[in-house]
View 1 (cartoon, one colour):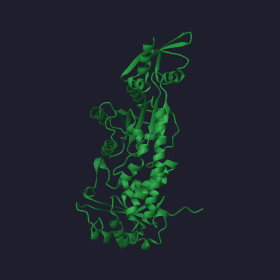
View 2 (cartoon, rainbow, N blue to C red):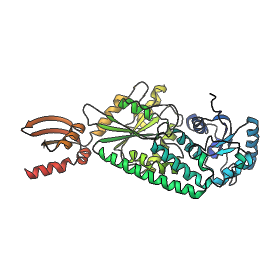
View 3 (tube, rainbow, N blue to C red):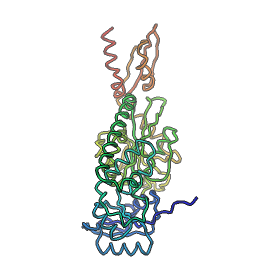
View 4 (cartoon, one colour):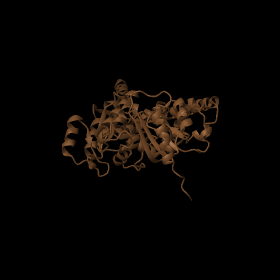
Length: 426
């Protein structure tokens, strides 16, 4: 069976930053878009950059650069152009008409990768909704000159079936998907309420920073890990048990990226609720990435946009096994107090991270002594699951427990109300 031939792609970047041969810490301006294109299955045959402060309203890049790009397409037999920029529908249409090949912008590429990665019903629905909102203003494009193109990057998922339909049908489909996601959100809310008594931690970070690897290392789970962007689209939650701390729920969710499409963020709102509802965030940073500081800023901005800046954060510098510079590591401790350097590959630093997690989970802890009768089975199970039992005594049909747990957990279980009610009755 022959493998499908890869699209021959030329990467294009335009803007002031593309005038720099090297970006932060030695990263090239087009490194990330190259990795995105590779994740989408492209064969990159060339690159074109233009350093300019003013954007051409017709082609985004200048007319002379368009002619240069057209020559490169012919010389390299390219079939697709991928921009590391977001283009207007008119710019895409103008470029395709002149270049006679498919043009995909940064948002279109990211949406395409999400369509490629989506596995569950929820993820597929979220991605399709974002794609249709993106495609809606682009349905008037002239696609006749691309008749020889079939599918491929930028038109996967609903792209292959929706390009020819009118806007009314697309809007109807969008409304239907909105209804489906509302139902999914309600179901997720019910599920979260069932877990409301447990301390919740969510992993956040730039895509491919190693969040799934850290989830596996801490929970001994077996979440698939791959050195590709956006491997995890659905939130994954695992239970972690510690000897001297309550049970903890650890969740992994979709990775962030520069210029994450707004429609995608809106569509994934129910998944991203795992971030908003967390009591602690572990911000995983790939310290071996040349642009780790820039990626850290992107994640912080996304957290701000999500309204999650008031949640405590532990920065986890991952992949320290690849760093052979003690002075650099010492500077990290000074610049980011409370951060934890780890290696999910060989386990370095994981014990320190566990200690920090336990400390956070047990912060503001309270010690209670309560009596439980035969009718208190449900709350008793929660106490055993989430508290550290100090003393247990039995009196007839009464079980008296002395236990320690965080004040926040005690509040969620309504233990103070229950204790006050029992005292009043006595």
